[in-house]
Image 1 (cartoon, helix red, strand yellow):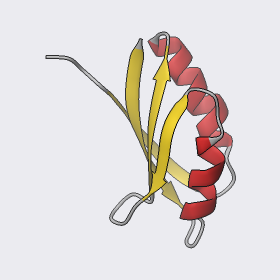
Image 2 (cartoon, one colour; image 1 turned 45 degrees about the horizontal axis):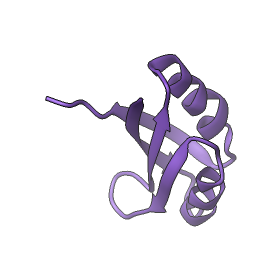
Image 3 (tube, helix red, strand yellow; image 1 turned 30 degrees about the vertical axis):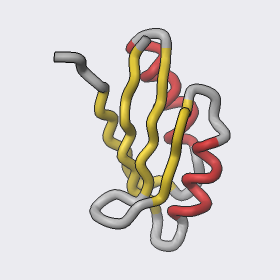
Length: 77
């Protein structure tokens, strides 16, 4: 199982709507709008890195109002 945080920047005024749409995507365990340099922080899970990539590129990034994402896989040290 691969887990990751996806940091999302949105168009002005779209954070709450983007977070709500992302939260409904399969594989997303949490999506919350926040303040700071990013507008939404997403927690997601996938079976492997390739599936995580498809989730981000095919699911999350297709949500209207997103301008940029940064995917941060969780590591266990």
